[in-house]
Length: 451
Length: 174
Image 1 (tube, rainbow over the protein chains, first blue to last red):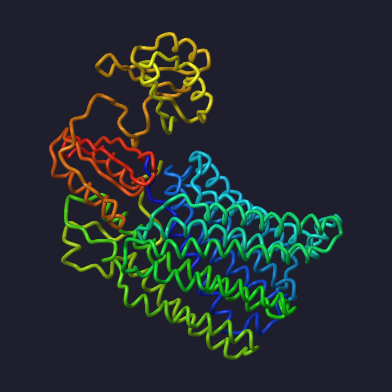
Image 2 (cartoon, rainbow over the protein chains, first blue to last red; image 1 turned 180 degrees about the vertical axis):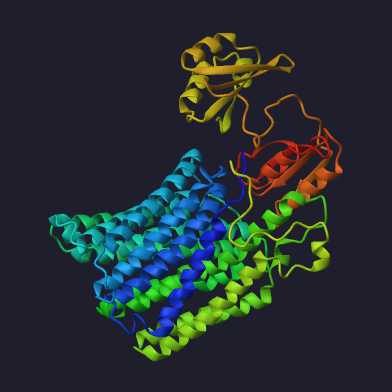
């Protein structure tokens, strides 16, 4: 019952993440990488890691530094460490991306950029694990959404470890047989742990709480939620642990990964059932933009899973894996991230500015910081474009995909303008703001007392 | 730093003629390194001080009135006073609430706004009762800053959080 203060550096994470998202969309527009280059091309690796690490992981880390303390009702273990963590992650990412460009010879240097970047990223994620781990440890016994976060953190440890192994082997620093075997066949494990365990499973857990909180749905302990958790943990252990064991024993991980993909279906179905229940049982009939726009993201997850299974059954997964990953990364994870950012930025800004004067003077409501109509237009454009882009990829329409990337860039840019306006209190009625009102918050960090 | 105290009320056991020693030791064994025990008993449990002292716990006993005692046990070397944003350890009887706010059906952060606004209008020492849908984690630091004391906890069914806020001196900022 000690209460939770604002996370000082969360806005810096969000800003860096959004910059990475814009950069990734510019790369897609320019035809720098996939689908113009092949899925395995170094250029595609640049794009994938810009999205997975630069955009999605930084977004999730920034959100977790604020949200894990709320989940367990304990303060963040260390509110200063996230800045050093962010520096490690950004520097690591920059070196990693340059390292990928070395692979096709477009960078002249022969410095070991890949292992350097991988190592820095590993340090960054270790700091994230330490800080959130200590916070979670203090909050035992953990509520269910926090257990999803724990599983997600274990997955990012697995994904980062595999990534570091890849960089050391590719740079020729590691030659041990098990490590080269993992590098040769372990890419699906790296993807399963990263996109499946870290990004998706954590987002699922957080969504249970966020959706219930903002739609005023009952937060009951439900057997289905528990089933989704243990089922998901089982699938992840099977895919990453079982697949890894198969590779280390010189076996073929493909059957294990296919089994994990099939077992994922009931887990996602149970999760979908829970989410539908939360929407149906909500006390708040009129949905706010953040809850409304989480729906197309959740639909993208369902469509992505269906597409994955269909392609697997048709034996076409290797050819169209890019379309599945695009739909999951931009429709599901980015869509959910953007829809929740819309609310989190407004809430955190409101609390920072008006928390100290609540009850002492008239203050605007959280929803007065945003203009819902404008944001919804950008969201509709965003999701429509992602779905059309997925179709373009399935039909090998590269040029259409690039034009759609331009629209996606426009929609994302529009949303970012809305976030910045919210942060700068640009849409607050001047009369409401008043003469004695708090000054505008800093764009990139929160002014909060250190502890 | 003690981050929280685990409450154990052995008064019902003592009144029923039972022996609470096992329950106390069990709770002590389950404490995390940063946790203490807040014990409520019908007498000053002096024998326990030596037993738990041998296990490395300091204590701070306060008479609560009516012959009941509250004792804080904390790992020796730790100060017993809790961090600033923790509920008041003072367990003297609080007056009955003069205002009630049911925030269970309000959108967050409306309940917090209503409670802070109501506290501004109340006299020092008056108590406000709030019913909430979840633990108000962002409210507590604001209460602490304004010098208000509070107590709170979930109902046994885990769906309603009850909070009592005792208004501090007006204009008091910590």
